[in-house]
Length: 315
Ligand code: BMA
Image 1 (cartoon, rainbow, N blue to C red):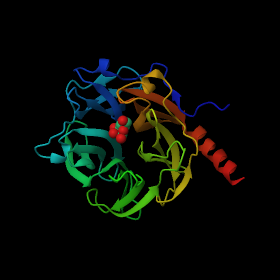
Image 2 (tube, protein in one colour):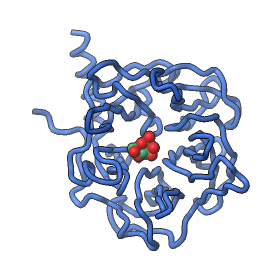
Image 3 (cartoon, helix red, strand yellow):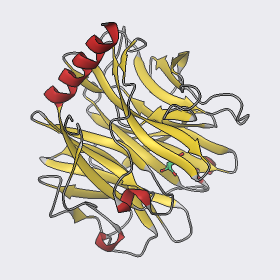
Image 4 (tube, rainbow, N blue to C red):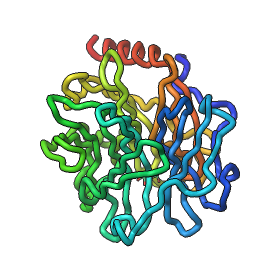
């Protein structure tokens, strides 16, 4: 049997509510990036009201000695941004070299439904909120770090209210970071008993590799005892990310440990961020909507695994 591609950190959960400087219900679904020599997590904290905000944590090795901000880093501001009435959730971070800023794409939630909002920052202290960039219902969005033929690219997941219509992943393009067009379906859920048959959505922002843009997506299967959230691997064409060149048949990571199986929402692994340290990927994932898990993977192993799976299919 092959060893797992993603291996859990032995001391998981890497961060949970007992690490926070104030009382909260849950800390999960964190965006991740490098910042001033540290690994920085922008964590979703769900308050005991049910409303979420973001809180920064930093660590040299991304495993221990986390320095966690004393106060919330980014709060919903419903008076200025009514779409944030019920909170802000699930940040995905991309560093945009062209403008020298980090883009945080997140879900803003209100009575009008979840939508995709954008904020820019240079220091993770001050944020320029740009407001909604896509209308409801839409979530699971992240930017690519560069332009393609002069245009920025964004992956996102609109979900039709009519549950008979599938929630697909889309890709859109734009000349600035605010207005999006050239919308096109990128990936659809599979059918029947497949692990990703109910809905799919982007998990981690696209990571540039020699073979293509690597990303993880979550696939949901609905069962009589509820939904199961698992992860699959995708590779997109380096020059034209509309082309999916690989999608794993099998999930590569799913809820197995008690902290992934039991929480506020059972059987959920939900990453929003990863970083590359040399050849090692550090993946940060929300566990059962309650705490944060860490898993590591070797990029070469992943690319070799993709290669052998592609070959297997062709042969
Ligand atoms: C998704 C998002 C995530 C959450 C997941 C599992 O739709 O709302 O924030 O972690 O469901 O509950």
